[in-house]
Image 1: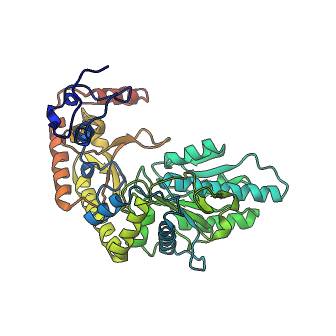
Image 2: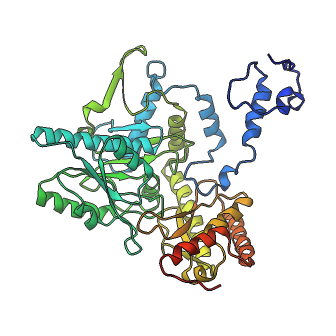
Image 3: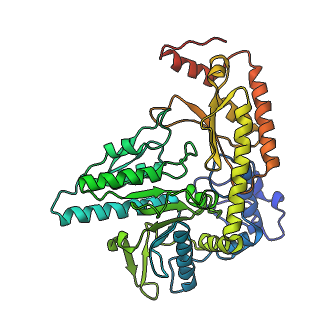
Length: 469
């Protein structure tokens, strides 16, 4: 039994026993404490972490206005699934789905579009994939054909959720390699990997690794000819986790959505460029015929019959209300202005970084508010440091700018990435660029290679390359 004094409402936070003992790690504390002390212990535990707006690695929204934050805080206890207690939340969810579907040029008639809400774009991707798999399986069963070897085709620039999906549902993942010449999904290479067991092809609008977009219109055109030639019915699911809330506002004429014949479902992340705090995802189908009935589940123990489509059951409604608030507050023009400002700042950083002697941009154009760059070939030969060292230097100034290797087949290329989100201003961009320049200047003064540079050189020597310092 502990002999420490039990704190009261008058106990000073930093005069309490809790502040001179380690935070609990293995068991629940025996005694309770005051809310002020508990709050401060948790707050202090995370105080030293990177400031969210300086984290340029994440796509997740880190800023919403005060009214949105207030609204979400006031609805934090609302359980989305309990439609008996909170029927208006279901109505608002349907409104959001309608608005997103129409943003993507849904051809579905009627006042209620076919879609679902998820915890994030990962769940939305899963739901789109499951629907494609179940439709394929039913078609195969109706035709009296085997349905035990489904496969899915997409590029190696995929997000890890697709690897999870294929592993969990035992679907073969057929990947199209990205190369230095073909930096997005090649429609011809994708079709080479298709057969009667292909449940869908998944192009990406806003590739996480590079910020580029797959050519979905060309894929749709070539897939149409392929399906006619083979008699197959292979659909497209667009993973628009990032691009779903970018393309309609900054490039509305570009056809990537339901204006294309074979696009049957699209998923996106509301908590990325949908501008809502995490976690929130959306998936929309072309019409209700593409959402298998067996994906809808009902319960009657919440006071009435509740039917939903989703991998999760209970989930917070706050993000849904935050999304609806944004749609009302910002409107189409507001979203356009924010996304275009993000694009402007991303292009500014892209231009400035591209002019630095040591760097080389991966792509000439910025098509989403993110981009990547590498050390130039000439600089790589003589540098005593790598981009991993630059990442560490920037982190000392509070910035999170990730360095990483590109996917398989081009994984010898080390890059850095900036994601520009709502909340980043031109002044912040200038501060970042100055910090990059200062960090490079310090690294250039090194007399000996860093450990990460030595590791890189060992790997390159294995490929027969030599270096001069």
